Length: 362
Image (cartoon, rainbow, N blue to C red; front, side, top):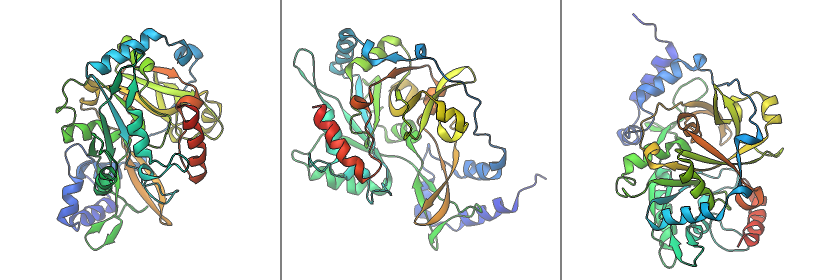
C-alpha cells in the first residue's frame, strides 16, 4: 500500500466539502484538475524549480533597429490575409492599485487600458490602408460581467471577443483549502499560461481557422501593440514563438533570457540564482508572437507553487507561465527599445509615466 501523507488526506476531505458550483468551475477541461493538484501538494518538496543557467550573448537576439521595411510589409500582408490576431491578457486583479488594471483610466488621455489596447488594434499600413487586427481579451471568470459592461459603455461598441482563463483553489501554508465560507473556496486565476488551453476550451481559434499567429500582450504594458516589422521577422524566421526583450534595468521584475539545458528561453526570476538575476542583460516584456499551431498543442504544463499575501493572509497558489512556450518551441528574440515597447503599470505613479509614453509614441 502506497503511503499517503496526512496533509494530502486532509486536502481530499476539504475538496469533498466544496459546493458543486465551484467544483464545476474548477474542473473545466484544460485547467488544473483535482488529481494534479493533489499530486503537486504531495510532491511539493521534490519539485526543483531552480535552474542552472548561463547568460546569452548579444548575437542571440535580433536588435529591433535591424528590422527592415520588408519585414513590416510581410507583417502587413499577413494581417490583410486575416492570419493574425491580437490577444490581450487582462485578468489581473490589480491588488496594488485597488481595482482590476484593465479598467484603470489613464489620467491625461482619459481612456481605460482596455480602450488603449483596442486603439492599438487599428493600424495604418505603409500605403495608408486601415488594418483592423481581431482582438481577443483573456480575463478571469469573476471579471466577465464587468468586462461586458465596460465594453458596452464604449461608443461605438467595439468588435472583440472576451474569453475566460481558468481558476483553482487557494491553499493555506499547511495545504488546507482556504474557505471564504462553508463550501465556498477562495479561488484565483491560474496565470498567463492559461492562454492556449483557454483558447482551445473557448473555441476562439477553431472559430477563426484562418488565424496562423497571435500577438500576445499584457493589458498593463501600455506600449505593447501589434508591430508589423516584428511580426514579419517572426513569419520569416519560421519559428513558433518570437519574444520581445529589453535591456535589464535594476527595477525590473519577472523573467530573464537565459540558456538552460541547451535551450535559450525565458526563465522567471524565482527560478534563477540571485546573482544571475542581478547580472542578467535581458529582461522579458511578456510580449510575444505564438503560432496558432503551438497554442493548440497539448503540452505538459509545469505548475509553480507560489506564496502570496492576499488581504494580509499568506496563501499558496499553483500557476503556469506563458514563458513555458519558449522552452517547448523554437523561439527567436527581438531586443526592443524600452521607450517604444515596454512601459508596464504596476502602481498609481506608473499611470502618469504611461500617459507621457503614449503621448510620445502617437
